[in-house]
Length: 68
Image 1 (cartoon, rainbow, N blue to C red):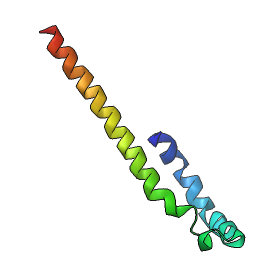
Image 2: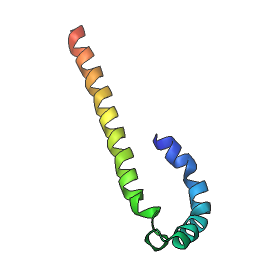
Image 3: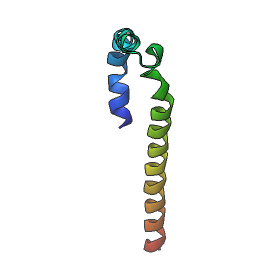
């Protein structure tokens, strides 16, 4: 998921002026509609990554305990 976000970052950066202009013309939060949810998206991606890493670490740790 994070790879998709990072891969699309240059496209979004180039398109941001057009998105802001279109959002301003349609009245969405004075052109800031797209960016206001970005911190939440980043936090969600980080939280999912941490959760998946913790699950993998815990699973590997429990497997080692079972082998002993």
